[in-house]
Structures are given as C-alpha cells and as structure tokens.
Image (tube, rainbow, N blue to C red; front, side, top):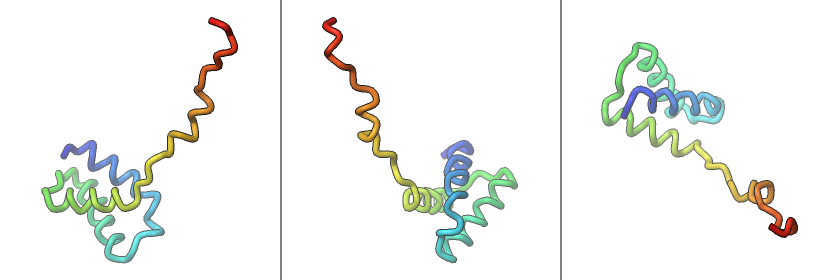
Length: 77
C-alpha cells in the first residue's frame, strides 16, 4: 500500500477518535506517530489500519440523490 493510502485512512479515522475503543485508539495513535515519522507501514500494520477503516467507514447511499439527477421526459425531445 502506498503512503497516500495510509494518509487517507488516517485522515478519515481522525473523525472517529472519540468513538474508538481503548485498544483501537492506542493503535490509531501509534499509526499517526509512525506516519509523522514518514514510515511506510508493514503488511501487518497496514492490515490493522485497513480493518479500523473498514469498521468505521460508511458508504454514502447514492440512491438518495437519484431524484436530483433524473431527466424529465416532458420536454418532448
């Protein structure tokens, strides 16, 4: 995984620091420190970071926006 992915995951997880359990928060803080040192994460660390990200990531329900982008057929074209 690239440095950019690490940064993306950490930036997203920052919003959820207050909701994290103690162990998750300790891991997150360790990841942030390692990121500041410009370290590339090893496979195990990246896997753990991805697990945290997946746990807190909620995808946007795009079906809510369908009514905003529907074309009306009333124009006659």
